Each structure stands twice: as structure tokens, then as C-alpha cells.
Amino acid sequence: MKNTLLNNHGVALILVLLMISIIIAITIQFTITTRSELYESADLRDSIKLLYIAKSGFNMSEALLYEDDKDVDSFHDDWAKLVLLSAQSSILFDKGHFQLNIADESGKIQINTLITNNEYNDRIKEMLLRLLNLPEFNLEEPEARDIVDAIKDWIDEDDETTEFGAENAYYQGLEQPYQCKNGKLDCLEELLMIKGITRDLFYGTVESPGIADFLTLYGEGKININTASTVILKVLNPEITEEMVSDMDEYRKNDDNNLTDISWYKNVTGMATISIDPELITTKSNVFKIVSTGYFDNMTKTVTGIVDRTNADAIKILSWRVD
Image 1 (tube, one colour):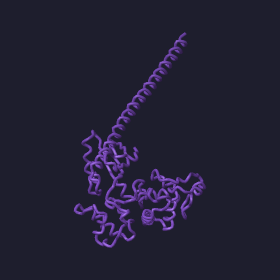
Image 2: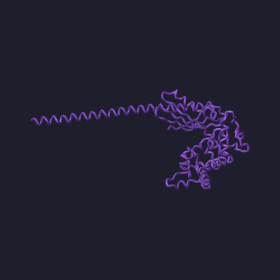
Image 3: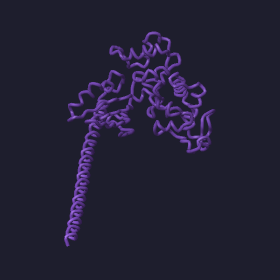
Image 4: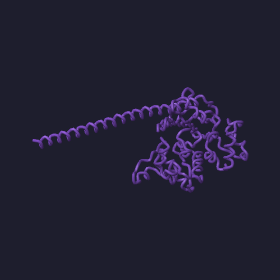
């Protein structure tokens, strides 16, 4: 009888310990789940705040462009001087701020204008060739010409191969075949599908820039000489030297110089005899790239968009991306 009683006590103890273990496990799991849900709710709340901080910066950039003098665009405009505005944005938010950058798309080569009616636009072709032949991109001249021909074939509407370019027969013969576009580019990354364009050439490397920095989908072909990068200034005319580019850049950054006339570059030392095709350059811009990055605690979120202000009544968003 005594042994039976001891055995019953032992079983009861085991059952009690087991129940306690189950209760503890359930409690711990409930606590973990509750905390997880609280953290997720907090993260969602902060993510929404972060997005609206970035959007606020984007909207402010649109307002700057809308109010800007549209008769001439240069680095002297308010949209090009955003360091102070970005620094002061912290007063608008609790523990948050934004960082802004506006780039003039008219300061880049407008790649979709490479052809007109299935034929080369010679002005754009020659400028693109000069760009690819710069030492920064480490291409041989035949490689550069092949790439330009391949871009033409990708954009034009026919299926006739341009010299050493590539049409549907080439792309269908790849290990993972796909169709040749035979139409305008919808995004710059589409260039990576074109024969000869590698990721290093497109995005750049530690040692060299990528061609993506100097190309755009938007515009009618004219380069804003006031806002183009020094790389683009260099390819406007084959006679322009590194020293001339440096002097041009210094001249256009001087507040005292008038940049409304497209021929202002002739006032630069040593450039009186240089002629840039007037059909290739302008001093006005309508399409801009806005990058607004929101900061909140240790998190960031970036809103990127291309906007067009051709319409005097409103800014039109051409593309939009949230990273």
C-alpha cells in the first residue's frame, strides 16, 4: 500500500511538472509572438513615416522646379543648390529629415533620339561614339562602333542588321534567347540586353564610371550646355580638350557670367574658334530626375522620379520608384 501511494505521488509530481512546462512554453511563445507583433507594428509605423518624409522631399523638389525661371537653367538655380535645404529639413520632422538631389536629364545624351525613321541621327551617333571612345570606358574604337550599331538595331523597327550590330537572329541564337526590341527603350537597364553592353560598362567599376550616368531616355536630343557633366561637355566637339572642359566648367559656375546664349562657350579662353553644332545644344531644360532619401532613426527610404515641366500649369511625373 505504501509503495502504491509513493508511485501515485510520483506520477502526480511528473504531471504537475509537465503541466507547468507546457504553461511556461505557451507563455513564452505568447510573449514572443506579442513582442514580434509589436515590433512589426512599430516597423510598419516607422516605414510609413519614412516614406512620407521621402515623399515630402520629392514634393518640395517639384515645387522648386515649378517656380524656377524656365527661360534658362544652370547650376545657379535653386534646384541645383539643395545642400542647405536638405540640412534644414530636420526642423520639419520629429527625428527625421530628407536629402535631396535634382539632376537635369537634358545634360545627358538622349539615347532614344539615336535614330529617326530607322536611320541614324548623325549628331547623336557621333556624340555617342565619342563618349564610348573615351579612355574611361576602355573600349577599342571597333568595339564602340559595334555597340552603337547594336543600339540602333535594338531601337529601329526593321530587322536588317546594321554592319556589326545585332538583330533578332543574333538574340534568338543565344543560350537563353529573347526577342530584339525593335522599339524605343522603356528603361535604361534595357541596354544590358544589347550586344556588347556589359554590366561593368553600364554601371561602372571602382576604377571607371558607367555609361548609365551619361544617358537618358527623355528629351529631343539637345544637350543643356549649362548643366551637362564635364564628360558630356568633352564629347560635344572632338576638338574640345580637357583644359577647355575645365575652363568651361569654371566659366559656367561664375555668377557674373551670362549663360542664356548657347554660344557663351566662345568666351572661354582658347575656345573662340571652336564651334559646337547649335542644333545639338540648348540652355533650357524641362525634364529632371529627382532623388529624395528619407532618414528616420537608423532607417532610410528613397523615392526616385523623372518629372517633366513642359506644361506650364503642372509638373508631370514620367516615372516613379520607391527603393
